[in-house]
Image 1 (spheres, rainbow, N blue to C red):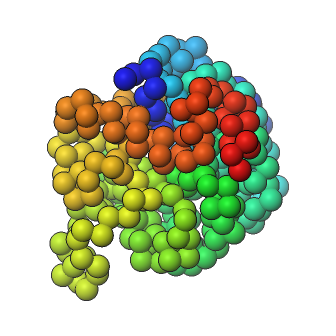
Image 2 (image 1 turned 90 degrees about the vertical axis):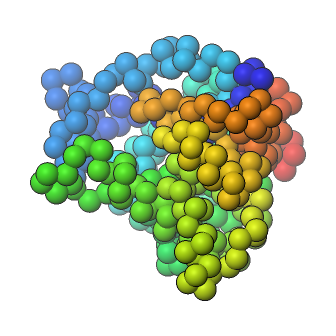
Image 3 (image 1 turned 180 degrees about the horizontal axis):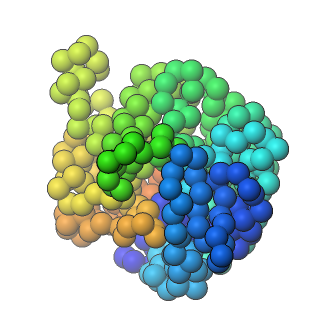
Length: 322
């Protein structure tokens, strides 16, 4: 089973991306004597462990995976920078990530201050399996409208959207270090989940979407949704997926009871967490780690199933089926 398993959610800062962050003097940037201190707006400096982004170490940890998908660290806020600041970092991200060896694959990233569908299409054609957007970009009808041209590029290519937590406001005095992960990240995912179901699906009927961290457990609020006049239970959208990072068997089991096992996919959030063991038996594990991720990826998943391993292989496989 492990030889074809997929992890849809990892982060790996390649040398090209690190150099781009070090070239800046305004947040987000990497500085300090060794160049590994991260500066974000309104945040205290954070010491990054370079071992977390060592390709050889990560590849060893990924042994047994057919595909480990790397995404931009959206909480950095790169996507929201002015185009002249965003694109050098985004280009460096793509340059480094698309050059990674097997089993790595890549989620594309894009500028949101001035969306450029043509540039997104070019990055997808280079081998990205789909697009990652911060949840803050698709958390309401206005955001979905603005992102619409980007989402249509995905629909045209049969490639998915991955929704990941985005930037947060600076922590107030006294808030613990875990606060962003437990409060604003979850709130962002809730908003994005409900916005897509309420507005986005009608506008993008063919789009497959995956929400990180089990959509912040938003699916478990169906009873409250019904009580407030929303749609009833049992209307599971087979093109809307949730991934498992940062949760464990209890949360995964609860979401499966609400949505079924067919839309739950494996994700780790490496290097910040490891992939959870669903604890639900071999059949469910196979669905979560293999069958469901490949279905989420569509044409890219078919290319992986056919033996593609590197971003270039995946790109060639999706081009043949387009």
